[in-house]
Length: 182
Image (tube, rainbow, N blue to C red; front, side, top):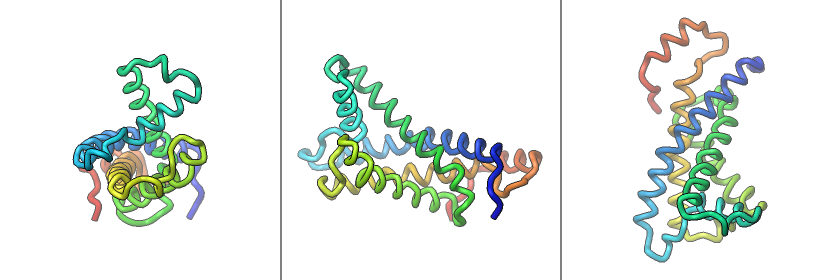
């Protein structure tokens, strides 16, 4: 396998970022739908809200935000994280073989584990996933699988399948429908 050229890496970062941003839409919809099905006592704010409000509190602005501002900041942080982690997926996506959706789902699980078992607890923004009820963890894992599958499919659609693919061939490929996960 040859290393990616800088231009290729930039394209892959951008493709992953765009795919990550777009993939956060179905993820968010899935999170909201599943949240409504939780038992009443488990319907406390979803992690993006809790994380964002803890961060806002840490920098001293939480009390200054009204509800529309809190919602806007939560959505900006959630979509920003989806975009950033999607950008990291872009250059990795061609380095692993397999169906696009499956590769993306694996990455989505890695993002969930790294975030909810490592990074967020380490930063003091959220208690580890092991402290949350199983149904809430299942909700977040399922949401990350939705995000990952969408990320994988969109990244594959936005990028050439092989290094050195011609622009004309890439244009023809982009005219085809999204790749199937099988």
